[in-house]
Structure formats: structure tokens, C-alpha cells
Image 1: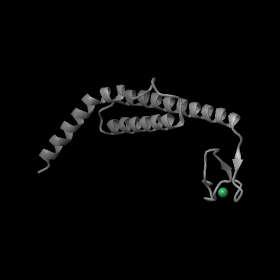
Image 2 (image 1 turned 135 degrees about the horizontal axis):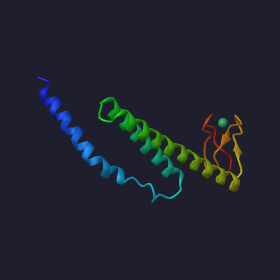
Image 3 (image 1 turned 30 degrees about the vertical axis):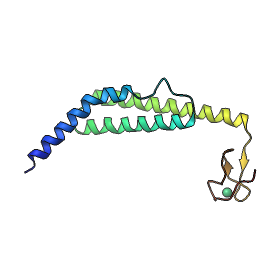
Image 4 (image 1 turned 90 degrees about the vertical axis):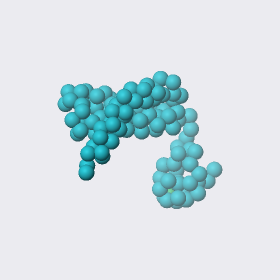
Length: 124
Ligand SMILES: [Zn+2]
């Protein structure tokens, strides 16, 4: 029968909902250094939260109002992050010159060893 499975599902969901505030508290919002990898990590975190919110809304756990509000908040957060990483890139571009691939003329990151478009080795 399906009953044990449904019980298991509800149990898992309860554990998840109880544990969630603690998990979210542990997200390194304020303590992070302003590095690209941390921005990537935060983007992934926000994306996960958006997926969770959408999942809970589909399951009928979150009301329409909450869903809209939380979702808008998360998207705002994501937009802020993108702004931050743009800012970060701009700073980087001022400090270091652009490089271009000698094979295909793609723009290269100064740290790249190989062209991300054609794979050619970058000359130092
Ligand atoms: Zn190339």
C-alpha cells in the first residue's frame, strides 16, 4: 500500500521544515569575503531557496502571498549579487588589462591558461 510511503513523505517534510530556519541561519550572508567564488556559492544558495519556495508553493504549504513575497525577496537578493559580481569584475578589469585569444579573438580572463572558446593555449 501507499500509506507508509505517504507517512514517510510527511515525516521528511516536517523534519525539513523544522530544520530549515537553522540551515538558512548558517548561510554565510554577512561573513563572506567579497570573492567571486563566494558570490557563486551565494547564487547557488539563493537558487536552491527559490526552488524550495516554488516546491512548497506547489505542495500547497506556502500561501500565494508568502510565495510572491519570499520569491521577490530572493530574486532581489540574486539581483544584488549579480550587481556585486559585476562591480567585482569591473574592478578587476581596471586593475588588469583585457587579453584576447590569438586564435579566435575571444576575450579572455587574465587568469585563463586556455581560451574558453576554442581551447587554444594563452600566451603569457
Ligand atoms: Zn580562442
